[in-house]
Length: 278
Ligand code: FES
Image 1: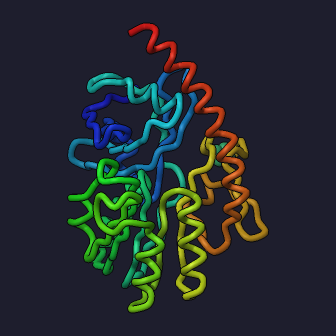
Image 2: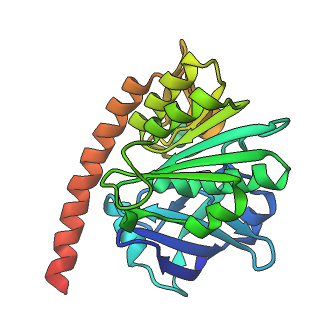
Image 3: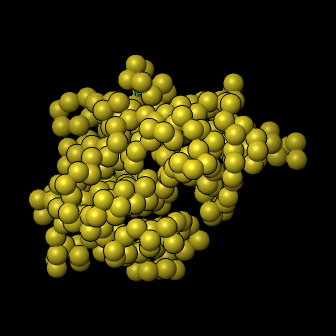
């Protein structure tokens, strides 16, 4: 059992939890994730390690309530327990020898982009950030990003903060004036696809972080398979980072859509049960 030491609402839909898991803390690196199960009847979901605190032995997870499992997780309060919390899983992001990097995040993808920016910044890499959100009310980790990046560019769909529009608008403008050794894109699949199409034109190596359906997290179930070039890979053991120029995004979108539909059906059921009990 893993104790929730801190619970904080970052927006009306996004929650941060710090979970006491010293064994996971010991080995965790940027880019890795945990698979958790809220209780015996719960499904396993992967969540990226957003931060670690070596002093108090906690792992920070940040999640958006999008389905049944995240809804149930969000019902948990401080000092309550999560049944399973397995990790760190996946390969750490390769950040060796990078001098000049652009990190692009979208929505709750910022929870993955933040530890990456921090790791890059701490090793002396020059890091610029483009972070996109629907609206100012959905922005997360603003102060944290400011502390670990050199320049920040923000976009919102409704223009309530930063530039109105998409991260790709800022990306195009930036690449007209300067270049980067490497681009990381983390967020909705359509965003990562659009970013990768642009960086390909500029021949900038690009890494994306994929978040397909995961069940066991050990490479056995095949749930997280993704098509990379003409190879099948498992995001849980071969990723979650992949070459953005090789990912078959349409295949990934299709598979994730099936899962989202099931989660939202289960979510409505569990929510209506909860509402009746209130
Ligand atoms: Fe089962 Fe990756 S989650 S193979």
